[in-house]
Amino acid sequence: AHSRFDAFGMSDTSITAEEEKFFNIPGYKLFHAGARASRGAGVGIYVSDNFEVIPDLRLHELTRKLRLDCICVCLRLGSQTVVVASVYRSFARCSVSQCFADLDDLFQALHLTGCQFVVMGDFNIDVSVQTKNPAQAVAYLQICQSYNVTQVMNKPTRVTGTTATTIDHILLSEPGSIKDVHAIDLDISDHHL
Image 1: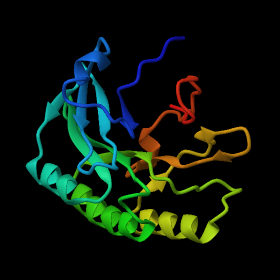
Image 2 (image 1 turned 180 degrees about the vertical axis):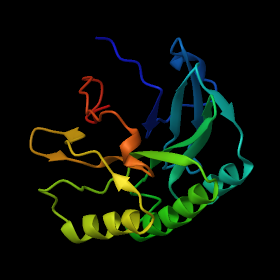
Image 3 (image 1 turned 180 degrees about the horizontal axis):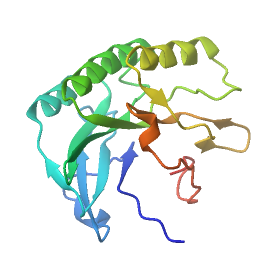
């Protein structure tokens, strides 16, 4: 059966404003934030046309201050509002400790919206069982847990000839609200969708 995504994120996109028109997907609106530094990358979120998108200036201002590349959109379908964020942590611009501080600020702001939220993206922190840095993974998951946020991606998301890591995450404020999680290999990147 064909399934349709309500929203999906992109990270490490390097798409310029002029190039966005080439990334049109019928039935979706693209929200994109380009990199703020020469060595960074951009992030984006495709949102189904079925959703109304509501601006939130506080979240917009916060994401401009983060060292993480981040974009947030507030989606309304009927009476429910959900905030969706797409994140990319560049090794060049955002250390792990800076990432943890930014996540703290982001989670605080998302909780203040009073809405359910989803944060997805490439954090470049491996949370797989085989991680080479278990202390880093534990510290990351503890930050999530301190905000009652659950990381639900449990499959490898970046697979090479010699490694299989889970560095792309889906973080949920209400884990019971998601139906299923997949890591789909599209053969266009070393990361899975």
